[in-house]
Image (cartoon, rainbow, N blue to C red):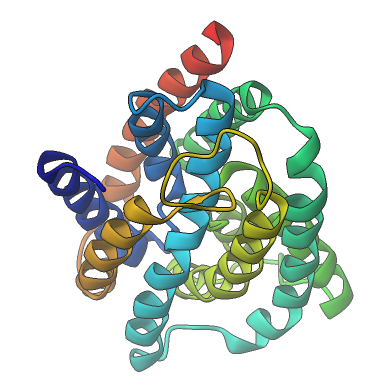
Length: 270
């Protein structure tokens, strides 16, 4: 069981990530993974296992965030379902490759370092985003599917919803930013579902799992994060169609740099 103060902290974290999930189409893993890692370490779970469980728990929470997010975005007609149909099969393949295969052979320390570097890259891309050439369009369905494999693999490694790969990928090909954010939110459903299944399977007999773990998924934290974030995601969607996206992206990028620094410190000092 979680302490009341910890439940309150997780609820606040879920509220914040749920809003950003709706506003930016993210799954929230970029924020939840460092915090859940911190929580598990301070509950006596070794650092290597904590990182893996934080990634798995974050990915499981994205299932609930995405469900709420997609419902709100679909009502606004913002999701490009044609792009979703082309990319999502590749995402499923990529997530299973990571969650059932790669994840079992990579140390938590390496994942923490990779996570920190990946967030730093994503934040920098967000700040330096340039307007694409007018001639750029979405490629063939086959190439979109291959891009989906890469999105699924990288997202599974860091416990994120894939927005920091898929949104830049789509906007670089002149998909309007609001459509890219909404479609990225839809990608979160298959990505999170198949990743969570893989993480539960691959961690089923892992040693030293704490009470409340289902494979690599930490159920107490998942429950609090899922409820809080699902309630806030529709408000984030509403805000995304009203707030200046450039300012919101800059603030979010600054937060990512801080979280990247923490994860790099955790990985390098383990």
